[in-house]
Length: 374
Figure 1 (cartoon, one colour):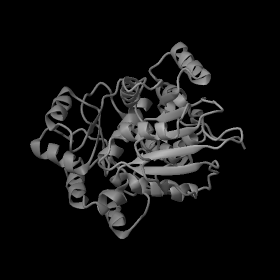
Figure 2 (tube, rainbow, N blue to C red):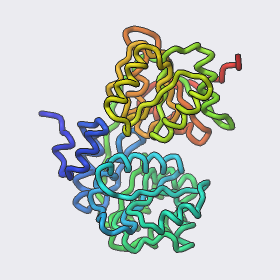
Figure 3 (tube, rainbow, N blue to C red):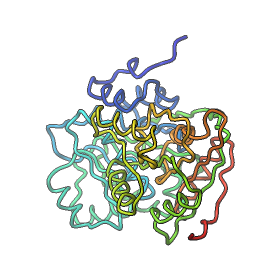
Figure 4 (tube, rainbow, N blue to C red):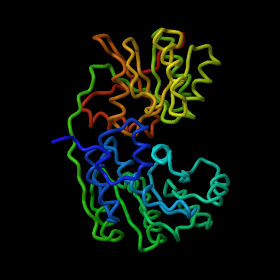
């Protein structure tokens, strides 16, 4: 039987075009199971870990049901951390590339006044942390009157972090006639109690974890607590005297900012992301292959198709949300029988994501001390 493609799902041409632009052809198991039911308006309980493609599993149908003529919040996604909120917002923006849908992430540590100004202009989707969403609800700067879908992403982690009361307040403030989607890696009793109280005849979807073949590459991570990531990057490149390295950022803005920083420090660096034209991409790749560019900074979208044999190391400057993207990234090094290294930068609050990757890939990512300044 032929493998299912996104063309087999009942999706609009705009969404299919965006998915194709991102380089994806086959949906993951959680996407195959969840998307049709969410499109039908059913409440879903999805048991899925990081790396299974769950953002697109709820993001694609959420985008399909948004009425772009109504600039009011129609979808609210709750995430445990601002990092995840940003990553979800970035992926939703990529999926809505060809639809005029306004997406706003809201979380603590960012100017609430700026968030209020954006919300007043009108947005279709909000991705936020429970605490900051509560702040806006109390200020009446976030209105849920027109909400059609509410998503709890990584619900178990939100409960572990003490957000239960906030989540329940938000759920009670949302319209009763709404679609409620819940994703969680585990299903403890508090999660099941939430589903009983706030979902209507939910459908349980559980995906079987599969074994992934990880390339034979030395994998390390640096704890970046209290340190500047670009300083760490420069120190490692210098210590290993790297002439060819590939650095992954999660956003095109991150790519542009890091390239500027590296160039100002004298590194032969350039960037690759989805907003660049094909001719510009070809020129950058040509420079990377012939060595006039030693450090290439890229997003996952732009990295598809990179096939350079002599890449000494891959850096996960930002941890990917999708574990399969991690495998794709580190597979760019250690080719043609040569040694390869992969370095991931993780703040203390992100170390659990390293553990998730290790569990999903059945591999070891060792914590590494920073090399001494030369």
